[in-house]
Length: 98
Image 1 (spheres, rainbow, N blue to C red):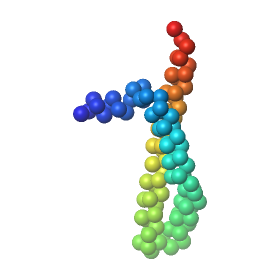
Image 2 (image 1 turned 60 degrees about the vertical axis):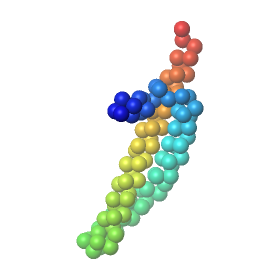
Image 3 (image 1 turned 90 degrees about the vertical axis):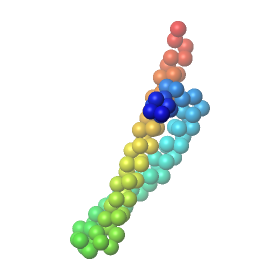
Image 4 (image 1 turned 135 degrees about the vertical axis):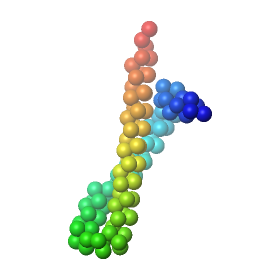
């Protein structure tokens, strides 16, 4: 089972159509997860700073966890994008090499 997962996660094994699909999907999801992320994070931190522990209890902590989750998801989507991009460029460079 472990070798199957490793084989599926290796981008060199992916068909070129799946690489382009991964490139497109990851770019859309990256944009979706990072949209307005900095302004929401700064507003949340300002809310917690102004109201202290009561701000955390009233939802500031939960929103902070959600912001961290969105940031991690954005990072994963960026890494998938860069991995697919690198593999496509590498295949393109090796296309005409003997």
